Length: 632
Image (cartoon, rainbow, N blue to C red):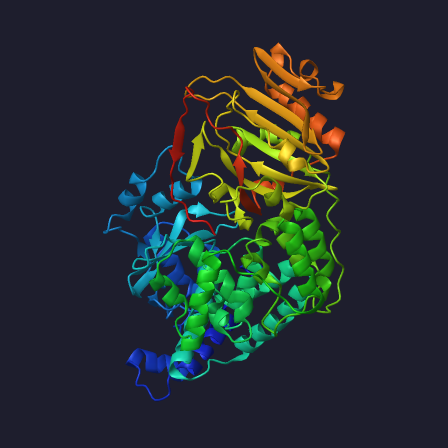
């Protein structure tokens, strides 16, 4: 519907009637409101063509179409939303004089990087037409410098007490529709406080739309559902926000997504409260902020919430669900914790149609995003696939499955920014990842630790790099069919003379490989190093270490791994490293999971030292780097 076709009379009459019905029948309104209440009309008499023409002569501009059409129905308006008690008609509209100095304030903030929107906003204050006549420090400014192809002037709605930027509306009509929604929203809250339910034909229609949107969301039509729920949220419908926040959370739009109290509901809390606990811990908020989250909760619920925060802080929370989907969650977590994230996702995706909601206000397994192991598996793209999949018995066409991912191989390590300071890993054949601490672990290391996000864990922080003792903190997982890995993404310096390859100890009755890439350091000019060794049945079979000007090897190095074949003086480190990594991947059929190592969570353990103790007369250096970082 175009603005010229918009039925202002019906729209304003509906608004007026709903406003009258929402007033307290026992209250004594001011005289002007009493008249509006009796007449069930918030407006005034229509402005004549002559009055409109006179206003335009006075202002020196032709007024925009939707504002002119509004004036033809009523020459002004009472209660435009909650904070403008009188909106201007032909006599009250006036050019904004900017006594407060907004223009100067906003213009001072402009620089060469300012966006067109910021420039437009700064200029608006000095040219706007002011429509608010009586308000609660709230300005309604119509901008003749921000005009669309239909001649509509943008309207900026600025609540001076809010601390927010002005809210821009494309036209006067759009502004009035937003104020009508604001009236609804405030009336809903007022009704909750007074005990009088705010009900009318508009609220009933919106609530029916919400129920339709719920069915659409469960059937995979989430974009349609999101649009309907967003409109209902603008009108303050109680069910709209908690339903919409579930979609927002999965889509990665979590700002202000708090589920509007549904997280404290005895049915839905198990699914939603862990998300708020995770956000609380991740944001390092204090206990007062968590208390605000838990306002209205019973003492028992508050204790349970506090315990949930501690479990989240310790990384101990685990998402659970009922039935077939719940069993898939357990299976997927087992894959994900060993780095098989693509497999974990496929397990979840296959089971999604079997997911069932906890109740009518539950749209999707959003609680997955609070699980420390499974949450990284749910990328934004996969979140959209979750919402696109029909669930809970709803009919609909499931989205096409993701294409089978090619194995990551090993060559990606050479181009990964996180590992520009080097990396090292052990690959072990015929051993499950959980068994690696028995082969490689330090007796004082405490065994396998709970999965952590590697980029913020002790993998990188608070560790010692020593030429005397080098006990690596390694992440573990599956490296392909029949192989496991132990990976260190930030090793110390390579101690050539005292390095002891862990391959022999790791191999057991099978095979084990050790790879160590050590780029040159900017501190002391140490040259690049690449080491590769292979052991079988407890004995090192062959090994080589290459530097730009030196090659050391032992045993019979297979032709495929000949240092002279892989590394040349012209492309010593980068190209040689790539060739070596590709050769290892192809010859042994191994791969390291890129997603799990860079974005997921994996178990860790502390290895035995990769260097022997210094001999008499040898010196050694220890460098300790300490940092503080909260990890969720």
